[in-house]
Length: 491
Image (cartoon, helix red, strand yellow):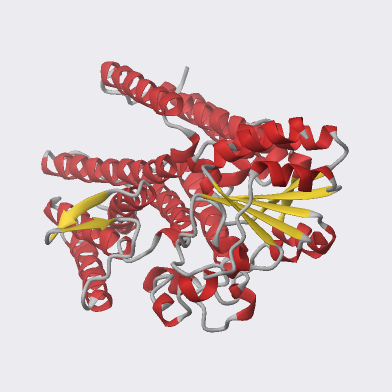
């Protein structure tokens, strides 16, 4: 088969892969079609990889096979072993791995071009090159972009994963939690200088294509920059950061596609980059915050100026028991459950489903109110509830269910905090002022399941817990639902 025929087949395969990527993203826009969308995206990637390796140019099939085996085994083990509560951490790491792959491929291409140039081989056919080196200007720009974006994505994602996993370490004799904002003195100036240094080194990479030394300096500086822009961000903003890092990984891949002249990598990277930016914008709107506020400020910095927990809770919190709630459920016709990260931590989603099924069998209408940033990543609650085989029709977005909450008999909050905190509507000075919330406080009766009265990531007390129509069930999420199921069956 001639080279032109091979090229035609490869380009057609790339076109098919691109179409599968687009339809895969379309499927991910709704829980009902998300699994099919994911499968289409995976099939598209398989087609793209197969077309690339079958088109020739492989120097050693041994390393290709070894890489496929190692990657497949590690990926399968991660998918099997990692619990759903740790999926956000894994997503953050995957974003980082994408960035690492991009800057390593771009760096390898740079080394190969330098090697080919020093041996007198052709290094490129572009009409516009740099100072007689044979390097196309577009390739050098793409190499620098891939190195900078890929490196900051890798190291920023590692920090984000550590924050999500609530990693701690000792510093100056004190225990420091990565999930808390880590605010360096003069951090904005330091970050700005580091960013400027990255841009200068990007220029040096393009002006000195005969050496790879500046490229690896860029990788180090971009790694520092990625760490600096991530460590000041608190855990409450992690859904936004994950979406943004996902976009960065796509942009790095897109730049690498220009480096190695791979059409499908350019298309796939552009799709991921654009969709990640759109998702980032959606997350920011869901928190009523700008991207700049997320990246350069921290939620909870001004929390100390507000009322203390004692002022909000003292003498007002009403504890309850599973037996009392069973009697409450007995007369309820419409029940809305608001899941939060506490449900994920306690792995309570299956017990939640069992209680919902039991209440429905007794004539109640049970729905789930989903906040866009509940949990640790976009769609976290949807994933958990789908894993428990809860019907997609029962999952209601915040904007859809809020206008009807006044007609709800019982609002049941499990592990959520900031996303149901009414001060977002009532206190302009609050760190979450203006943030759209689920108006669960408007239900006739509110039941909150929590271990304690500890604050959410915003670091502020929640007046909902002390409201006149609220009952608190202090318990582990899963155990609380087991007890509720038992009490309802006995009532």
